[in-house]
Image 1 (cartoon, helix red, strand yellow):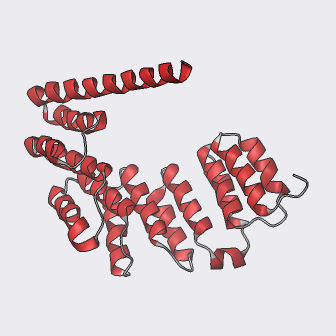
Image 2 (cartoon, one colour):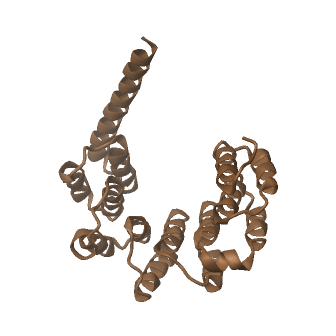
Image 3 (cartoon, one colour):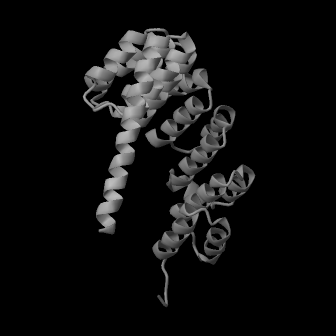
Length: 253
C-alpha cells in the first residue's frame, strides 16, 4: 500500500491496540499526518488498556480544540478510559464540565463506570442528571443504573427502572438486564423472586444466571438454593465445554 489515508492508518492502529501492542500502536499513531477523532480515541484506549491513565490524559489534552468542538468521540474515549481505570465519579464530573456537548454514550460510559467501580450513588446521580437534561437513556445506561441500584440496596428503584424499560422507554431488556435484576433481588434477600425470574425470563438461563444467584445465596447463607444454583451453573458450564469440543472436532475433521 504505497499511500495510506487516515482510515488505513486507523485500522492498523486499532489492530495493534486490540492486540495489546502499545509500542506498535504508538509508532503508528505518530506516523499519521493528521489524526482524526478515531485516531486520537484509539490511542487513548490503547494507553487505558495498559493502565496508563496519565498518558491517556496527555493524549487527550493534545487533541486540537477544533476536533474536540466538533466530535464527542474523543471525549467518550476519555470517559471510557476513566471508567476502565476506576476513577469515574470525580474525574468524569470534571470532564463533563469541559465538554461542549455530550451524547447518551457519554452519560452511559460514566454511569456504567461508576456502577462497575462500586460508586452506586454517583451512578444514580449521573443518571438522574442525564434525564433532567432531556437525554434519553439507552440500554447501557439502564444496565448501569440497575447495577447501581443493586449495589446500594435500592431494589424497588431497580424494579421501577426495569419495568419502565419497555413501557416508557421502548427498550427491550437483554439477558444482561435480567442478570442485573437477579442480582438486585438476590442481594436484597428476595431469593425466590430472583430464582423465579431466571425461570420466567425470555432467555435460556446461562451459567452466569445461576452464579449470579449463587452469589446472593452466599450473602444470605441460603444453602438449599445455593446447591440448586451451583448444580445448574455446573451443568451449563459442562454443556458449553462439550459444545466447544464438538466444534473443534468438527473443524479438525
